[in-house]
Image (cartoon, helix red, strand yellow):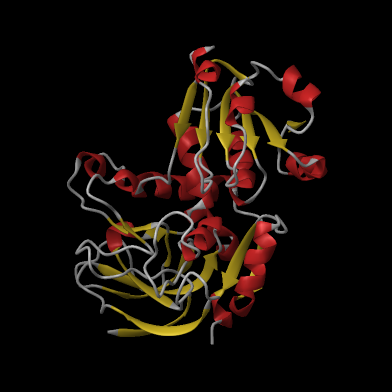
Length: 348
């Protein structure tokens, strides 16, 4: 077994603290890479606090993981020692269901193995995430990271990046489309970058007028204040596609009114409680309310390659791991531009 240093929550009521544990030895098809940076996702906090479902404790969060390969198994073909590598939200899947065969491992019909707060495919062994100094993953679930990009700023692409890239690609967003991004946080700022890069006309929608300057700086063409009834009314029937990144409860029906006929409202933020939708807001215009998770491994690598070719990374604030609890508090207040990333070198 490989000794590992990490930070873990021992229960839903305790703060993260240093915790030592072990990972499996490198098997024939495994890659071990030492973690250099790990992004901080809002879902880390949701899962630590049991907001969505009962967690597996102790819990080592983190699924935006990048670093350098230090060991490879005897049968590994895709990586060599010294390569830059990353792992996102998945570390395995069943490999044989219809979705897995279609490169949609994120929708594995038999249950994927998530990077933390989950189990390996034996459905017994807990998985531990990237708030730690090294990780062992099957080579099929390890991604190549370009040395053209800032490594720390690349880490959030493994969740925030692919979570916004995947739906925009699935709905073929590009030139001629009017797209709105709801919320300008870790997910939202990546949605803006991708939608602009794909050639869409992009509007950021937020309750905070103060975010307009940042939205325009990120490349958005327009800004709409959703707390302003006149602006909402003026935008009725305007958008082909709305990407909703907000993780708190909010009124979906208002956003549905701003879709064109056959428009789609796609939710990628995950509020803890149910969101009511009035039937008439969907029926009146043959509109769709949809959702999207992360991407499969093939699409995630495609996204990383697209980012390398177009110089796209997240806007980040690098933090010491001992400041993680304070960072969560700031994240809840929206006090981050736009993603915290842990410098794992600070894990002693």
